[in-house]
Image (tube, rainbow, N blue to C red; front, side, top):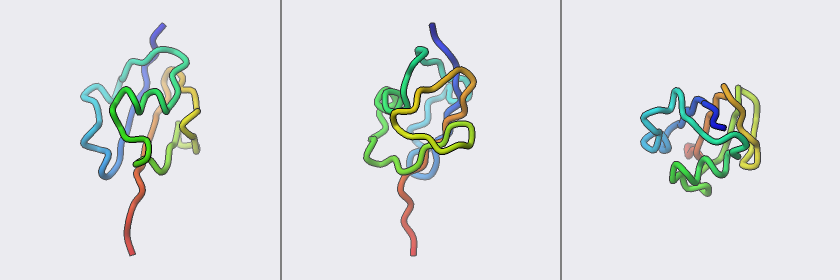
Length: 77
């Protein structure tokens, strides 16, 4: 069974966002890590993961209707 989620990638990751990011279909039980691999997003570039505005991690399991936000490490000074 597939579910739909919304994906929002920020900063340098934005270019890797799929065209269907507003209604991306994944198998039920997919982890954030598995999704990042599917999208070919280098996991080592991911710094913060939020699911529905709450802090998540690479082992978080995504559920139907979730809003996933992924941020890279940000430089500055």
